[in-house]
Image 1: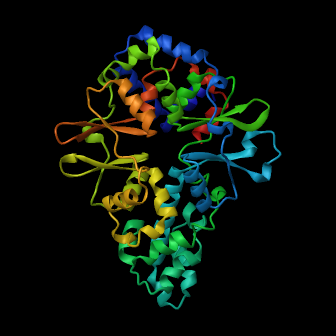
Image 2 (image 1 turned 90 degrees about the vertical axis):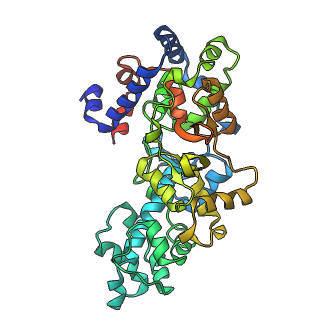
Image 3 (image 1 turned 180 degrees about the vertical axis):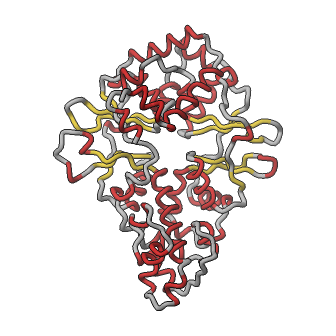
Length: 440
């Protein structure tokens, strides 16, 4: 089947087309200028893009525990890393050598789904009433209630929920069947057990990489064009693009959305960039969503609801708002590391609100917590790029009025999309083997 037909048959790729068409229709840049920029990026080889810091891509072994993977991501201050398949360590094919990308998004998905299965299992009080040992409640409860999805078999050991039951936690089938409700109804032991013991400590990265991945693993070769990379990072919603050298299986570079925007920031002073950067964001149709479409979280809501909302909406961050949608904070997928690595700070999971979470982190991580980054509707594209690059953040919130009401969001993906368009047949001509992987 031709790639063009595959695109038409894929709802995901259709949504990519819709997103990019919307952007192109709203940009006010002269078409000749867009063509010049697109052709220029098409002529730049991927091999010319700057290497990752220290010149070596940080990889995580497939047998690494989720706990240790979070530590590596946090200590190296990175959002994601390629996962190395130790069983195929001598293979010359990257498809065998790497299982995919592990990132905070996948970890959040796993934590929430595993916790929800545990909540359902704990609600199966009939199992304990019938004399079933506490240690077996987890597995039997999940099976009895039909929880046979990925989380039911990925690291969710009987001990994880059994320990909570053994600790005297009473449950009822009518209690909610999601993690936040379980935390509220079942008490502190629920998350203390989950984060300190099982399944967090024993589940390996290889167990969750396929079931909970946010996006497919799509490398490009060093002789590919930067236009291909920019399209993957914008239109096709990849957050990172591994770079391989033909004939060699190792990942040579790792290009992220952040790195590209920082590269654009480095172009300041060049005529072509300055002429574009001086224009207001409205000339690019930014922000692309209306104020009614902005997904936010109230400071009084539970922090677990924030992560659940990001999971449901497939977004990487949320503005924390107060009355009249005034922005008072920011929560991102990356913040899950605090709950997973510093659980001792959060003694009362079941009542931990978003603002409580933000204040605790701010008191412990002085200088490391990034306040919400904002801009105005009349801000220039250059100022937005500067804030994104200099603060190393993935999104900036557009605020208006005296109350700084959130009226839009601009992401790294949106900014990259402003500089390019997709030439006819580029997908067929340049993406090649990517098609099947992208559709899976």
